[in-house]
Image 1 (spheres, rainbow, N blue to C red):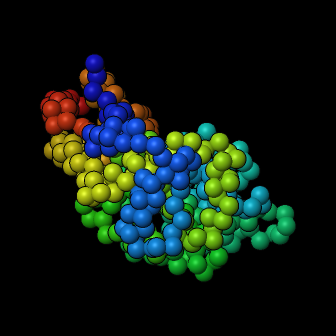
Image 2: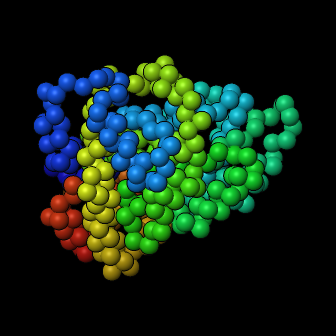
Length: 344
């Protein structure tokens, strides 16, 4: 069987989560997210981000989180500014467009959006009432190609959004990997200060499933629970989500699992560097995009699963490798030996 580097959710869940689910299995709790575990998890998240007024909601997955948030806060004539590689643009089957919201896509080589691009797109749509009106900026941490926003970059985007009257929403599907990355200078409290809404991804960081949507402005969350229910996203057994987040936010487990994934990818990156192989982007997280020849791709494909990501030229393609919190040293070492043996 091939070793998979296709994603960071091929395994089940961290043992601490499974143990917590087992230990509480027969304890009766209210449904629909009103259970004790969900309330305790929300309290821990508020403590982490330093915002006791934050409104928090647990949902099952990332596309669901994005669709719920954007569908809720945007009026029918309002649109979104994002970079060209944004997850909502290419990997969510048109979910946002399907509910009637245009996405303005700015070109980007590093997966990030800039204040200059935001101002540019915001200034283009002035023919009222004949054009959609940009209302929200969408960014991700980490980005779709594994890069990171710095605190200075986040502050600059936040200030730009404040000046233009735009909401700032951060997709945090791989937030754990971003927070624990080498060189990262964004902390939990910065997320509360410099975004209007963000979500904390757990599906890709040790949970069976689950994301936590955080509204830093409580007013934006008015009637959001009704919207979740109407869209079929309110779990009767909401305890399953709450308990997982309660476990992840105890003893810094969430950040530790992100760190484990990043550490394994660092070893892999160093092996490619030693072979003189370049990358589509310079990453320090658990995603890596080495640029390989077709022969090298065939060599690695014999024993490993991964995605072909982007054609670079006639002879070279960038592949995507991802490590998870559960990746064993022995699995990584098999790949390291294969990289060492690559021929041009």
